[in-house]
Length: 264
Length: 328
Image (cartoon, one colour):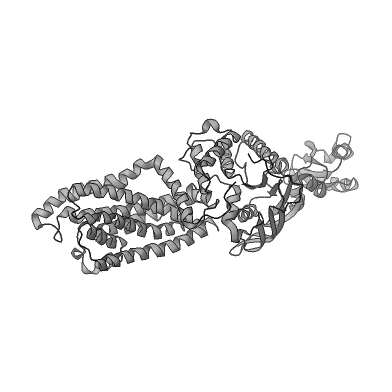
């Protein structure tokens, strides 16, 4: 006999997330490249190659060896990029092209379960990718503090802070025409100018406020504070609060846009 | 397969009951105050052209679209209050297949079963049964993407049965399939009916409605215009037979109608001109042909190019009720 009650919210989310996990088991090769190999190549090129120059010429950045400075930046920026890409085309696929979101919404799962499960799966994947990246970065000398393991949490928060509002937005779209613009004009500038590759004080003063509202900058600060073991509790709480606000507001909107789209 | 379903002629409460059910999207009224009842064990149909409101009605029954007005109970529950619970006890075959194209046939069934929170061993047993039922066992490990439309459709139906639903909703189950695939699907749905699975389906095919439905409503422009069994609808709204007459030119057809109409009325028949032919509704097609349009007819100008006497169908009922054919 079938179940006759609605699943509790967390359970429904996990049931949907398992569908994404199943698809990933078949198509994991692509995500290994974007989630692990690509950031490692950046770490090699920037942290080791460029880093040697930076360290020779100016004795590191912000008092850190360049690889120590850039490793947490790359960790979090990679999470942000993957989260953004996950929030655009795959959401359109589930909503319009393959309509698998509609298939799930015809079962006891609710639109909020589909929304949450879709995001939760990518968050879990981000944690795995972050752990792998941090391990390699530590071997290369980029993670001086054992607190660095907490940077996994920063990467996950960063991914969630991008996904929650972006997935909510994508659910309102009828085609993918705006997606390349979002990737080029929003995600890429944030990737470059959120304190990932160089400290914020290198930016012209007028541009710094943009970084302050960037979830990526808060996550980078958090991750770098962890890998260097240098962040204070107050600063950490502030960054977590900002990221949490992005997630909470995005989530509330996302549940609404998914509900409207899947159960009109 | 569910074998414990009751037949339709018991006095259990209805599975679906709608009163003044209404769906609006902004100012557009998709469903305009319709009433219907679906009893356990029957196959109930919504027949009508595209845009009549069939799919909107189905989505309200499926608890994926809140009603704008009126009352609706499904399995005795209010979809607005108990949507997830109802969805757990019904099966849905949507108009557009929404299968996981990258996954195998088997994984599609297993993942869907997990949405219902069914234990994995039970899902596996059920999925194996359903592959058999849908005649897909030899495709168990195929990816779904390259399968034909008919195979995908059968998989979607099998998927909709994974939770042993008390009610199966099928939205245009055979649209877009070739005749062979349609007949196979009809046969499978008939098999389900024999096993006692209550089905609600929409179609814009008259032959499908006649083949499958115990009872149906005809929808047009958001309203129900008639209700009954296929046979009773024909008896009530149409004549026993229909004569189709085709003429060479529209002018010939006009002349023929002018002459035919009064004589037809004398015989208790009515002639209805369509753009490409004339339909004559009569209980005695051959008599009509013999007297008015056959070789011995006394009205030379009414001789058509071709004459066809046939049993009347739901298509004729729809035409009589709405003045329009079902073709898009």
